[in-house]
Image (cartoon, rainbow, N blue to C red; front, side, top):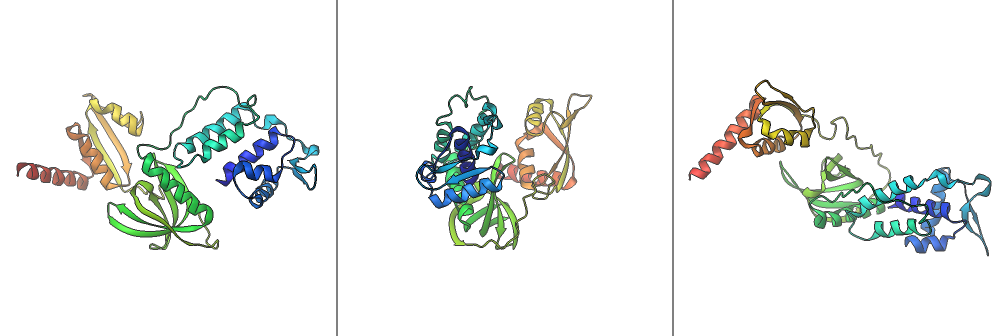
Amino acid sequence: MKIDRLIGILSILLQEEKTTAPELAERFEVSRRTINRDIEDLCKAGIPIQTEQGSGGGIRIMDGYRMDRTVLTSKDMQMILTGLRSLDSVSGSRYYGQLMEKIKTGSSEFVSGRDSILIDLSSWYRESLAPKIELIQDAIEIRKNIRFRYYAPSGDSEREIEPYYLIYKWTSWYVYGFCLLRNDFRMFKLNRMGNIIQTTEFGKGREVPFPNMTDGKEFPTKHRVKAIFDASLKWQLVEEFGVNSFKNMPDGRLLFEHDFFDEEYLLSWILFCRDKVTVIEPEYIRNEIIRITSDIIKRYKK
């Protein structure tokens, strides 16, 4: 990704007195033209980079505005490498691993200490997830639509979108883009996407809002549930919703109240808890649980 390359270039300039565009191009496996654009972007970001042509020339940080290496401390570099390592856990290639090695090159004293944070973003679906992330990431970079089959509770559908962001949130990966079918911006869960292909190139004219993932806009609350749980499921409530998600009742049971946006997930979760939970409200969720369990009983009696 471009941001990773910019961090890598800046790290090299901090560690070395001077480098050249061909050296950077070979190191990051891109063209010299791409490196020149990266240097321009670093200059726009306020990094005082000087380039000199001809024999003995190269790229360096200006002497008159020399950046101290303490701008990035050993701890800062460890955090950068931790972030790259987490991305490497869902990468379908060796790109992030190679980038980490490039950043470390010539700076063994600067990058000291052992890792204290280990992040694996791949979940249980690494083999199927990594190729999807790589394909979508590439489509975002080269501005190409992606077409895929989407499997949702409401049914299967064929979708085509302009992809803009890959998002890791709510323990899952999503792609955020403009859906040509709905004519609006939508979020799609990668695990529900199949047969993904890149299609036509799209332009830059559309104004893209930053995905709002904090106020319920993407997943608005639809169901306010009140339920009583057996004390034996306290660990599960703590694990999924936190230590303050319930109140202890005088008889030892737990009073739980929470908002849910997905009825299918809510019903699956309640049924997963078996006879250790009793839903108090809303009434329509109670009725749906009765219907489902009645159907199960009928099926097994047959």
